[in-house]
Length: 204
Image 1 (tube, rainbow, N blue to C red):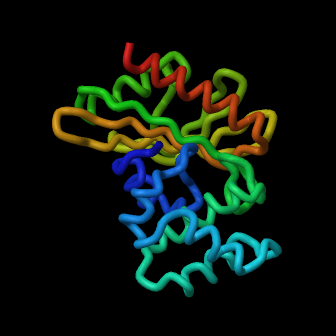
Image 2: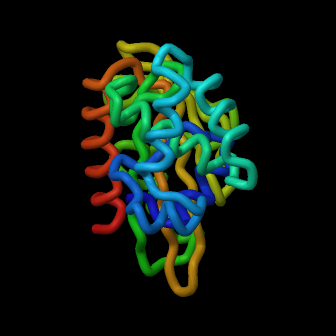
């Protein structure tokens, strides 16, 4: 389950459809929204299942005044998963995404240095607009400022986006990798494994 720091990252990057792969507990939902999963699922059932994600979330927001927009989106996403209207890791636009993280006892600066030095990303020019080929694809850097990395990834399936954020805590940093715009559930699973492996390399 994505922790509080991850949720801050996702909100900051305006990815309201990006949700954890494991459902939040009923107590967590009830504490944040005043109601549990059963209530919200019954409410959404009442709208019918022919609606698209945007209209479904819009109707839920109208029926749930005071519930933060992020939770409206999250409840709608979880409902769509539960009712078989979308797969895990699939966005409302139909593409797939992955989010993995690792917490380490280092500063943001040290984490950044280690990430760009991993075998998958090493020996490359980390400046905005730089491009290079690596490990079956091509990287086009969009941001690299010591606090965040963002690049377009081009491979056989097309173009996707990778964001690596560094969330500072007391005596530690959480490295959060978000990869969006993937074309299929197969690509989702492949890149989940790839990014987990990459983060393990970072902490060795």
